[in-house]
Image 1 (spheres, rainbow, N blue to C red):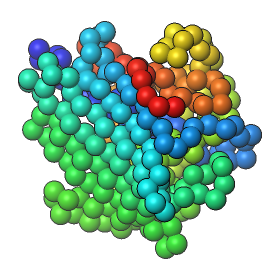
Image 2: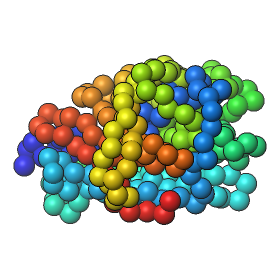
Image 3: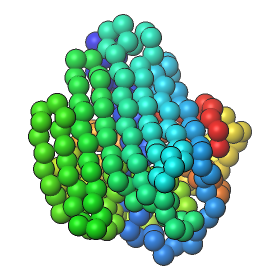
Length: 259
């Protein structure tokens, strides 16, 4: 069971979050690209997290209207058999302003990540001030606090997913964006690799496959290649993610939801 714990620790709790970061790099470079009519609010996506074909946990990604703002939540939990020796209970949440256009749903106001993975705990927050062009990083466990200068096109690792789903993804073209994570700005590249038809809960669908190149020292580590499959239609639903680990591979597969 040693390898199961190590592999799950490295990626299964982060599988859905890795799916999100692949989207980050399109924000700045594709702002002028043709748009599509993507998701509706509310939306809920439910995933099985599997390790070498065995279910190791579940993940949920949900966006809802919250009065004058939009709230996006990502939750990952270990399966019962994994929790016996390594419990995972992670929650990531971002609150956005409501955008004034169909393509831009809003800017991040508050991003918080609360993680329980075995004995490891994290409780960190980012407060964005887009007028002052600053982001305040807060560590609620270590009582650390740091203010960093940003620019207007900076996003947190969760919110930008919904902006990107309104954009065209072009095969063969890498794009870049600045992402605030782990007390600093990261310039991230994502490669749009190919189009591929796969079997999903939605049936056989055409997808666009992307590969993010991680740099962040935060919730996304530079360990193993990550591939993400988006439906090649107006919805741009992230239906699958796969990443190699020390032993085998971790996959996140869409199983249900409201979309």
